[in-house]
Length: 369
View 1 (tube, rainbow, N blue to C red):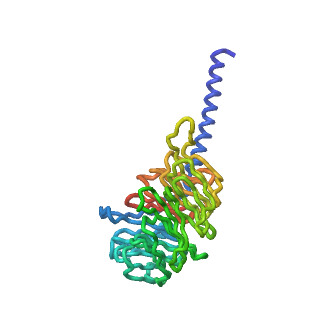
View 2 (view 1 turned 45 degrees about the horizontal axis):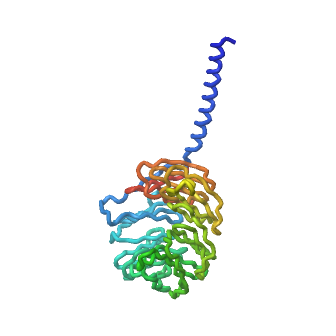
View 3 (view 1 turned 180 degrees about the vertical axis):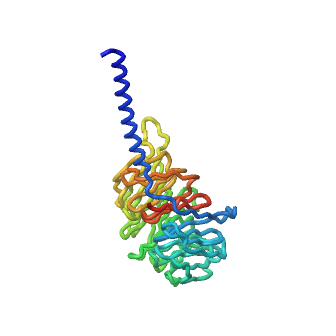
């Protein structure tokens, strides 16, 4: 074979190989960015330039609820606007259960229970200045007041108990209905060093026990029938309902984001590497998956450089960055990927039926094709 012919044949073979490989790459990318969910509706809020009172979005069993400073909007999981009602106050706290919405005027402490039709089914007036409210299994409502007292009511607004919690910054509170235990974690601000406390009380309002998490900052708490899981800045802690520490799983990097995944009973933690010396190098940014017993079952790199938050999505999770969105499984496989138009504030989801992308002044609803 002539030298020129051999060179031409080599170029032809190389070209065919590159074309084949390029086709494979394109096929892989097309599969990777396949979008099974499409935007159906967009809802605008925060149009009054009032930066003190901002809209808040919650999810229910089959709906999104947008509480703007002047009105409340009820949107079905497929993005249809069902109803809206005017609000008399701009300073409103909101919480959602599976089928009910609870609203509270923060200053006076007037609390209202609404059904999925927007009808007021119960109310109580004048509880006093409200910091936060929560709904527990559509059976009880917890009202945390500014004086650190926790008022527990049933959904007909009948008073169950009042628990006076220690003074400090209440980070989270929850209720185990089966064992009738109230659990709260708080940051004691009376000392120079950090001092996080966990307080346990019965449903009659009496504090039964507690634990000091000295020099550790608690991020979030999750409870089940048997244990209390607390994520702190350096570990995942598990307590029994007497306040006794059962397990401690150290986290060797900075915890940036986390998700207590209720449906799968898994805990997702996004950790970022610290600046370290060469004698003690650390791994890079990772998503770590733990079961409820604190056993690590997976670790993988995130789908993009920086994770800004998680949202539960059926058996999977949605992770998002500044403008990136991905649906991933617990082994780190990317199932879907989307790009936001502006800086994303938060992702809301209803099982795996749909998800909502929250921007500074609008909510986009994505529904399965």
